[in-house]
Image (cartoon, rainbow, N blue to C red):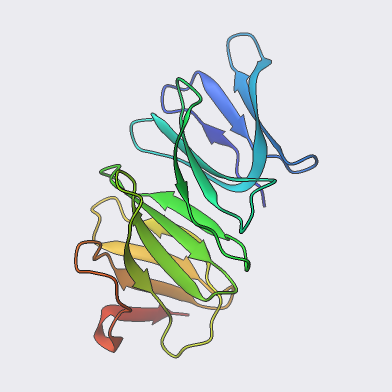
Amino acid sequence: GHPILFSKDSKFLILPGAIDNTIRIVNLQTYKVDYRIDGDNPISINNDGSLLAFTPRKSSGNAVQIMNFQTKEIIRSIPGSSSGVSGIAFSPDNKYLAVAYEYAKVLKIWDIQTGENVYNYTTEPPGYGLIGASISPNQKYVLSSSGTYLFLFKFQPNTGIKSIEDDNINIIY
């Protein structure tokens, strides 16, 4: 599906581009489209409402763009993958972005300020494509799905780039 998001101040509705790959930002006071973005799902807005992440339609490698919601300026571009991006989520402290790369079978954590990849999660047993991304409000867990299974990982963005160990993953059926 295509999630519809409210801005954190509830003044805007963010509609992903289901038909024409254009994200629309609708002003809920005027009910008019205030802004259009050449992009599509997945989309995510951070906790304080200052940043919007999305996948541009004409992006090479399906990069993820992070936009300042007020100024509409792109502040960071996160590398994509030829396999596409299947989920994005901001961390509750607004410092990190989780990006699921479905066919690459990895969920990566990116530092928003530096643009660096700080942690990679893969499934065990290997081979499951990851769809969607979510970080728990207490920032202890990262969640993704293969469509059949839910994968619950310990959130460890500052431990260096590596894949998780077997004891850091739970498969939920």
